[in-house]
Every structure is written in structure tokens, then in C-alpha cells.
Length: 321
Image (cartoon, rainbow, N blue to C red):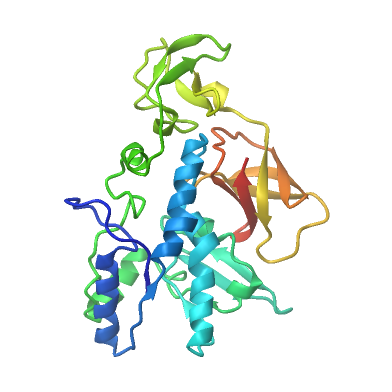
């Protein structure tokens, strides 16, 4: 298992993934199953490739997904290296997704069968090098079945509560964490859609596109964050309809089961982990893609991942710019 960080918050009773408690649980599970157990110490790289990137993105007024940062820049490359060093043919993780191989030898990433637990969104960046050696045994099961199997086998984590927050911010206080990391966030102007100053915000790290709660300002209508300008230190707010978009771009595109397409394609996009999928037309190019909405699409947050699906297959994705 991987040790990613040292506890930076104390007296927090929320469960988190990838914590020292999880390492100990994994050790106990391995002992119960009679398996050898090793810990990969990735704390320094996690600090650099995940925590520092997370803080930097928020300082730029963007909304990163740290699980995707970890999977893309750290976790799966390390697991593959560890598998090679141990002489293992495959690596297995507990993600709720599936990998299938077609008749031509190409590997495809598909959704887990439990729609409430599907984690294909955070795995879109995996390429053939990873997928060809990845086993996802939970993808064909529902969560309650997994818990039942674990309990029947006497595993200590069979009834463990699920993590709901970022592993290194277990109390959910992103602004407090960023301040602790030295990210300065000064009060600035709230603007309306016409650029008029309508109030004062507490600092851009407190906000994300589409946010409604916690704005602390009365506009006479339900107001949402529609834009964040880090350079000007302004946050624009407006009605829900102001969140609608007809197109957006992604950078650092990954085409999960193939090389970059040479022609536009139709698919569905998910713009954050729990978002509903929306039909789109994708025009690949220059390592990214231009995405045109074919349905109602709202609250595009730069820094988040846009993941493309055709049916239950992940065809690719990229970072919203």
C-alpha cells in the first residue's frame, strides 16, 4: 500500500482515504489473508505533485481535483514501478470501474456496475501501459456485496465508514488548509454580470464556479459564482442562467483506449465527479480538445476534469481551461 502524507490535522474524527490508519488496516487485511505486505513511501512526491499543485491551482482561481492529480502524476506510475520491481504481472486496486480487452488486444476502461460508486471519472488518464496490467475486482460488484464479502472473511475494514473529503483536508476547510500552506487570499470585489461592484468577498480560495451557499451577499435572487479572476481578485456572481455554457476547451487530453482521434466525435461529458452526463461534440487538436455542448451544460470550473463517455466506456478526458 502507499503512504502518501503525514497527518496535518489532529482531533478530526472524519475518515479519510490514504491515511496512516488506512495503512494499518491494509496491514491487518494482508495478515488475515496470509499475504506479504509492503509500504511504498511516497510522501515527498505526494507533497510536490499533489499538495503543491492543489494549492497552486486554488491560488490561480481554479478548482483542482486532488484524486485526479494523484492518479495522474503519482499513484499508478508508482504502482507499476513497484509491480515491476517485485516481478508482478499485474496490479490491483479497489476502484469501482472495469477494464476489458477487445479482440484486437486494446484495453478499455468502463464504468463500474454500481452507478452510485462508479469511479471511472478519476481513472480517465490511464493509458494502455496501465490498463493492460490493471485488475479492478470491485468493478463488477455493488458496494453492499463488497462489504458482505469482507465481513464474511473477517476483514477489519468491512464496516469502515467511507471517506467523503480530500484525504489531506479531512475537515473540509480548504481555505484554512491553504492559509496553513502559505497561500494568501485577500478580500476583494464581488461583481455582477455587468462588472459593477456589488459587495466584498472573503478571498478567491473560498469560492468555486457554480457555488451558491456561503456567498454572504443578498442580490434579490438566488446568486451563483459565475467567474473568478485571480489577477484582479474579483468574483463575479449572477443568476443560475448565467452559468450556462455552449462550449469550452480542455488541455492535456488523454484518449484512454486509442491515439488522439483525427476527426470530431460525439460523446457525453461529465464535468465533475457527481455531475450528470451531457451530450457533446468533441473536436480534438493540439494535445487538447474543443468541446461543444449538445445539451444543457452549466458551471464549467477551470481546473476540474472533463471526462468523455460513449455508453459505459471512458474514451478520454482532459483538464478544463
